[in-house]
Image (cartoon, rainbow, N blue to C red):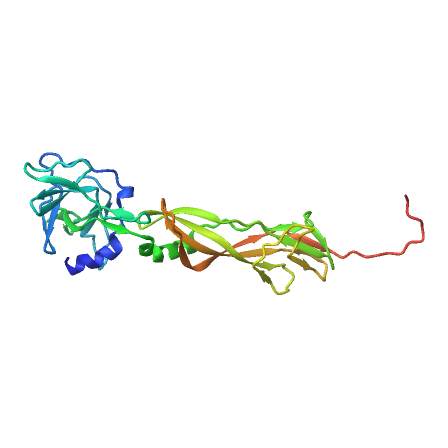
Length: 299
């Protein structure tokens, strides 16, 4: 394989995959879509592309694009030991040739990638494409696993929208008392988010790991791995020592992540963490004062 093609495959091999591409029909008469590879040399006789989503990478020098890539379902036609790659799910081979489907031998935790084809052209100053090449087979069918998506999964985990943990305060009516514990807790749970990484459908799972409570009165935040609980089984609380017209309780939750290719069973850890922040409604802090009275209290 030529060096520039090999470099591009590292970033482009996932750009369009079979799971996102409608099955291409067999080539019609006069529409040859294929390629042949022998001894690491690729010869091309593609006349017209037939199906498959197209990916056009930006030019490195900032100029107009000059190449495109497609992945399509394919089969092979064998003329003795010589194999020709053609698209489609219904094999239609020239007379005297035998058809065989692609089976890259992927495991249950991998996704099969269809063969990758490339087309090049030159763009004139007027923006017209000229010298358009045929579609060239640059990579055979292959298998992709979670290990090939780790970097993309880490980036996605930091940017996906994770629902913040709820903040629950007791007493629940927007006020509390000085020198009386104010109970706080949350009820988090794992969240599974669906997304795509380089065209591959994946699931990313976020799991809460720690909680940092800021009680809005200038005291140091409380960090814990305990989500807390409601009265009388509460484990997280804060005691205000001064009255206040309004304080705002804020909870920052730190999440760890895992991901898997959709439809597979194995979860792979994501390096790093994500955080969410949630805030309770404003809370007023009263000071309760005792007072001696001489009159009897009514029954």
